[in-house]
Length: 537
Image (cartoon, rainbow, N blue to C red; front, side, top):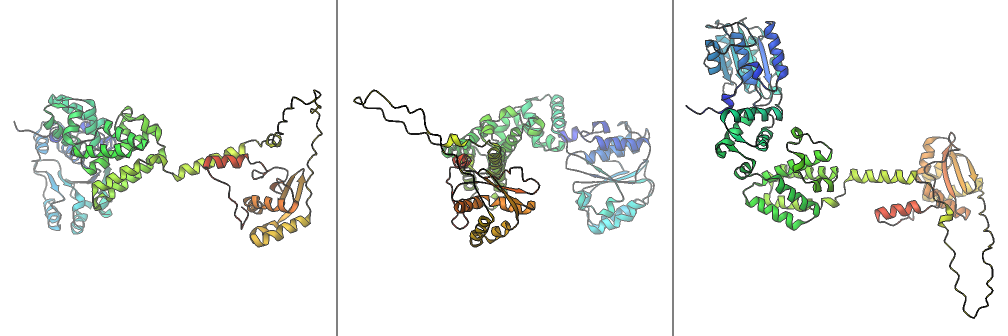
């Protein structure tokens, strides 16, 4: 007996066998039960998901000798002929090879004749988007007002290329990609049917490679079975298909996060030496880091990841931030797009691997902004340190020489330190401040003219503005204002900016002599405090 490919052998023959298209199946079955049959249908969706199979099942349901039914018998002459593709009243046309207006005119002539022996004359036009504009125009009138015994079923993978005038005359059904779990189950059924031994991981890989197309999964399945001698194993697939195992990519990724360029490049060369193409290397690396990013975001569902989460290196996932993995993916995707124009594809991949070995030290803008924000909140929410803690301890007294008298003066009683004088500020001081700022920052001097009043409490000066806008502008230059006031008053002060509504509430921008916050920033960013000689900031 001649070999029959799995996709043809396992083609659905009933609506109940059509996998992954519940909406389409339920709607068509409901319309058949109520005998609300449209004169034109448009089935759209990705390749290999059951559009043509659904059209044939619909044709059998309408022309079955048992009558219009949702469960065609499959044994009557009409069902047999439709299954074999030899039915006179079910005409299948390939739109890709019959694109001219003359082909459509032939259909217009044929529809004038009643069916030979069936209830309906059904035209199934596959890849209908390939028809020319003239052919579509010739078809318009026919599908709008066809004879009552004629039904058109159009199938297309690119529904956007079908003119709106055609779509508006059809009932449209969109077929979805089939889930990975459903494809894997169908592959298991095919293995059981053919007595093929298999590994779960191997079938999972085939289902993932099919990317939602059951026909593609069956085609790849037939290829794997032919090279596996009836025993599908993942190790055999890697060897025969030139794949990079997850364990190898784990090792390569660990070299990257360790910054070991030598080992990473040497491992890359050993992978290429095994016959793996440059493009396949980039694809596998992209899929690996895409899965690592999902695991980093705590997504562990196997159908989403396309692999088991425990197969991926915890060291790599823990060492990289999500933003860094996004940067890796961006680099790899750009590399794949540009590789076809490269002078040497191997050099491009080596350069990318070398760059990825420094990913640990990459500065990601979003991470830097988040760290600065967290630091700012930490500094603003930290309690102000006491001044007593900042005062230097008195130097230790030298020990008395042995010849010194035994009587030691009492040093425990010390005179109390003189209290710091309160700050006094007047309108004259404000005018002096404005005069000094006119040369350095005229805009800031203009802002100070909006001061409505000021308050002094101990060594804290509070400028009160009439509006939030001017207060915010002053807060942006509070360091400059404080430095200028210190020069005018000859002493250090605390400056606070308020509005009339919150004059009693201290603002977050209050600046004191506290240098702990500045020191904390300097230690985190390993920098030094710089003052602009022009602005004083």
